[in-house]
Image (tube, rainbow, N blue to C red; front, side, top):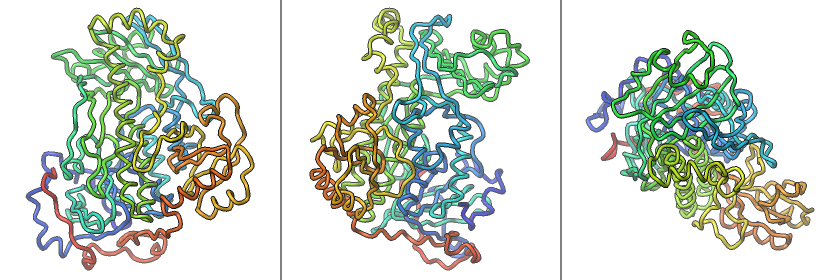
Amino acid sequence: MRLSLFKGFAANAEACPTKESRVTHSYDRGARAETGATRLAADVAIIGGGPVGVCSAILLAQHGLTSIVVERHPSPYPLPRAVHIDDEVLRILHTAGVAEPFRIVSRPGRGLRLVDRRLREIVRFDRAESEISGFPQANMFQQPDLEAILRRHVDGVPEVDLACGVEFIGLRHETDGVSVTARDFSTGRDVHISSRYLLGCDGARSDVRAAIGSRMVDMGFEQRWLVLDVDLGEEVTSWGGVDQVFDRDRPGTYMQITDTRHRWEFRLADGEQATDFATSESVEPLIRPWVGATSVEDIEIVRAAEYTFRAQVCDRWRSGNVFLLGDAAHLTPPFIGQGLGAGLRDAANLAWKIAAHRRSGDDGLLESYEQERKPHAKALINKAVFIGALMSSPSILANAARSVVLPYANVVPSIGALIMSSVTPRLRTSEITTSRDVTNGRLCPIPLGATRAHGILLAYAAPTATLSDACHAKGLAVHSQRDAGTPDRWRRGRKFVLIRPDGVVVASSNSAARMLRSVQDYAKMFALDAELTPTARRGSSTRARRATAAMPHDAPPHLPSPVPVAGAR
């Protein structure tokens, strides 16, 4: 829902200052904090209202936690950025309850072609719907459409408040959580938020990352690329998948997003800038191989922007109860389409752990977030860097791979999987994950749907009454499943599979008695018998206070005022 206190925040887009004009260290909260500040409280403060931040809020709400999402921009950024997610990430959107509206605005991608500079096909990988989930393995979309869907959905989630036109200023660690200072652009007033946890979903230039003193570690890839989003006046013949142009002089990527919207990405040569390609006439030679007889007059440039593609991972993803997610924690070149997806995976991994930590107080739950997500993020970044090197490296090894190895990639499964598969690697051992069983730590490929359950037992045989009763008593859902044969190899034929809320396998067994012990151990580890009492949000339009007047901006100071920390930008 929209936070009633912030009802005027989106009214004045011109009130947003530039990055350079922001006041941080020199900010004097003085008397203004006493007479003009808004004071709020929630379980979780989320900095950044993009897809990762809003999806995090929805997943937290499914576990009964309240959140306030702080977004500096008054309205969603209107131009496309992310354009692809895979079937694993679509399952996260399914859990968040937005898969169906997303499928309306997206289109399945048919696969990937590796081509040379003349668009001669080197090898082609076709993609279809997943045999188990039923979701397309590749999904093309425009990010503004996804953001609109998420925001419409969150308007109906009473545990979530979205504050637009509000900028994060600083944070302070408290004994029982985190205090946040923000500023309302439209009024110039301060906003103080008291929360138990803070999620930094504020992108590659993350202020939250700077505030906790974390830094990005380079993984050895940096290139300047031109990103072109183009509307064509008429439909062009396209095979429906993605083209990766393997050319050491001008590597590139092409993908069709909608019927008339297309994206091209080309590496910029030394001395070239995006402004060199600001007109249809200057772009036409680059995209002509794809657009056929389309006239220059029918080429409308929606965006021509320069991006520096980087491979980086943050050294620390956590400081106390402050966490980094998405581009704030990792950056990847876009060659395998996993940028946004990695951030949504972060959200799915962390949300349920925060709820479990509220019940148990076990710090190992929070520690496991980076332990589990960082290796997976690095694995996908390394794959993207590998593909980027194959596309453009002038080395003898890369030339040999392009000319000798790649043409056989679709008939040699290991090579094809290296290029195409984005299946989540099995989680390494963490504070809460063991590798005692071959299925533990693997991602279940079955869509679990939106649920407030603490976990799910997949039963491929009738569970005993004792097992079924134990699951229901601990808040675990029991889903009866039909053996699908070959696609079910992921579970190694086990009759009972215990799944975490993020879809990761905890335990599996053919014995109902052994699974009962696993359920009991799981319930003890995550304190499933404990009651979780969400923080009552102060100053927000919660379900119980919808009919009451909103708290005025000069409300009494119920909460201590946080201050900027050293290092905050």
